Length: 367
Image 1 (cartoon, rainbow, N blue to C red):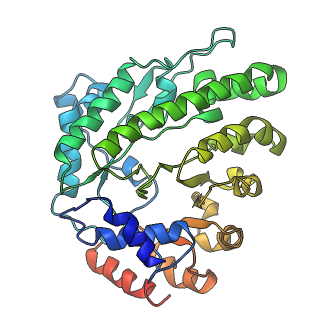
Image 2 (image 1 turned 120 degrees about the vertical axis):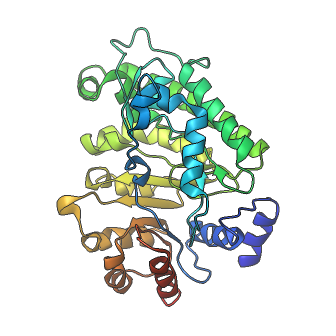
């Protein structure tokens, strides 16, 4: 098993100053995709959505507005380099720059204007009716900016970091951004006929766009990776449907499942982003999708913490033959180890010090 992973890695040349154990770390990831453990479960020392928590309020003195700051390639690359330079990346934590204009950027390529804030952006709906559906604008300023951010990163990444692709949300999440969530919910009941045709066109556009950026990265010798920080030497995808928390199983089957099926069959590795218990209502159907290697379980906050209340769900995923990405506090580690078998587990943990990370790695070797 391990020799096969080594053969796959040997065809790539990814040497990083901050990650001298890159090959061993990727071997653990490739084994994890197959619900295998080489020596210990993989662990990424960061927290879900951590990239959206760093506030930098210098823009007022440098740019006209937040959009100018987000669009400043040199600043974005230099700011990332400041964060990774001189840092050690332990476990299966990789230094990854992915061009980011916010989670609604795919809708923006169809004409939705983006409003930028300090750590995220959002789209203003533009679809007033289905008679004149928007088309993907390959000359969109947002697409041109994603290209230039990618190229700028590729020019300086050698030996320092990996370059990934942006956060793309096709399917019904994309349509909710274009139409507005409340209007789309009403359409599913009152005017469902145009929706499936529009979703099929969206999925075809998504695959072309994905392959376009995947081609850019492959040509530069980069693995396939995005905001989740999990690499693949094929095509890595993060399918999701946050809109699913508001719809019935029948509507999920009719309007969500077909697009997801087309997406995942196009890819090498798929880690499905299950954002909370509302989406988890559809977990059985999600697990039936072919070519899903793993589920990222995002349990939420407040009453949805701590993680131990969700161990039956996690074990359900393991029993289905899928791997799981789990957010875990270091204080929960011992109880979690007692409750869940290690096979197919990838932990993401927010830590304070390198010494803490080393101690966690040593503990995981005994799991």
